[in-house]
Image (cartoon, rainbow, N blue to C red; front, side, top):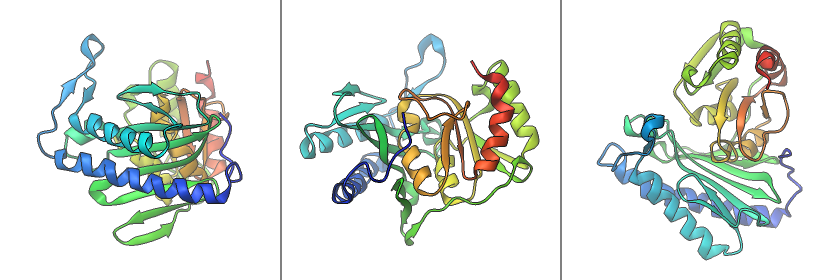
Length: 275
């Protein structure tokens, strides 16, 4: 999956789709917020594989988003965590994670997000990371990203970080790393100034906002990362796999950084975990 190109779509089309993306975030928030810190209908879909929660918020928000896409753009495809694929080979495909960070959601922690990305001919070109409880939408494309919040609208820009010794890094949970991956994460963590855990995709938004320098993740699905790629690019950051290549169409092992120097040092530490 190649890096998003701000010239991939005509600017008029971007404006139209950007406005629709904001509408989708508002609709998702309307479906989710009444269930946050309330009776959210928790179900464990993991079975013997271990705890894997899903709530009525996850399902209701994705239904709302899909209904709006179907009505406005019936020729567009959708890939969603809760309801699978529909026309995944279409020219335009929306990639959805209605509640990324369901564990945070059921714990009442406002670091879960709604991830909505748009692929054009297989490439992520537009995306958003929404946190409706905080009234935040981090949204953008490779031409520029911005934060929309109750405080107004401001551009997003990553910060400089020349190396891991000065870096604030994040991952969802070190337990996701196994074997050589855990050893590789340990090297990155030992070299970094500070690590924060448990923020899921909200940490990606913080890279774009210039408060976190590096996020390392593994075993991501497409809906976990597609939406973030254009937002990070538009803020001046970089999203790669652990080998420094573009993230594949099905997710995988991902590094997100605001500064290429910091990313390079991290990738060197991760190199021993290469497949």
